[in-house]
Length: 331
Ligand code: BTN
Image 1 (cartoon, helix red, strand yellow):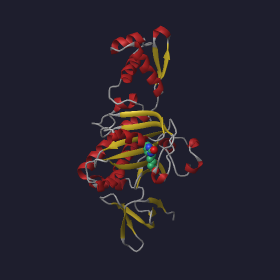
Image 2 (cartoon, protein in one colour):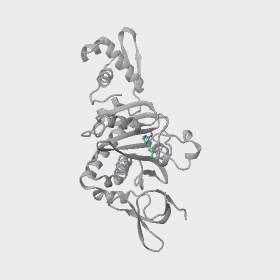
Image 3 (tube, protein in one colour):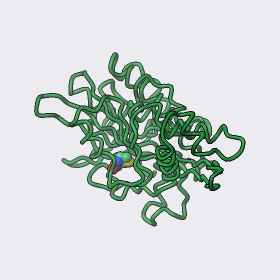
Image 4 (cartoon, helix red, strand yellow):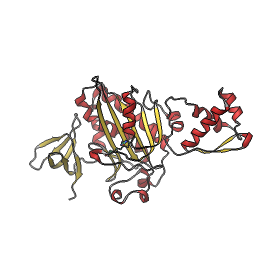
């Protein structure tokens, strides 16, 4: 785990990257004003992040390969945010990033803190579903938000997160993609590439925070998808054939998330309703929304300023739907 923008591993990495030949432990220790043991420790951290670093006896270390991963040493130098991601906790594996971040939040972690995992053993989705989280394939992370707005407004937050994710993914995809599927998903074509799980936690002293859990299928290949997901899931790579640099995407995501969240805190959903309409996966489609109390069917007519979905019913009446799972009905 690491938490500051200029971390020791990054300083060692910069020396390794700049070295013409092998970098001796002694030279690195001298330049960084740390011990050789401390240099060796950072080399091992870098190896744990997936860097290939060869040892050359007394001559030192050589950087051979940089991983395509959202490790702190690749993301932090690319960050252009005011605070989002400045506290950045990277885990090789964990059951789920949401409870890890919740623990940090309870101990006072600042807004914008990120917990990201290369792999989740028990990734959690909405409605007690799971989230398939294999290594080398996606971005699975949780972002801590401490909104100061009325708690009732927090229900519209997943749409703000969704639009930010869509805007960050757009440069990697053909025009018009991806789309935001109310209330919590991102689609490419008619398949899901990202799921969002926002959990509001109320603390004993009356405080509240939101854990925004975001899972994105980035470089996932169809062969590793379980059979039951093959018809409904996709990834950026499956859609385009191209491999995405995950650290670059992660830095862009945090920038879009911070900008979107700032606007939402000040003005709510109103300033982004037009953009949501342009990216709306359901607009004009006949859909059925599954809710705890039953189902409702109608034509999707956009999103209201409070984040609810506007449905035009068969009898011409308008109805607002506040939660549920939306399914497009095939003609
Ligand atoms: C859904 O579509 O049902 C929501 C999926 C949310 C998955 C992300 S991955 C990071 C974070 N940790 C989890 O266990 N879940 C969320």
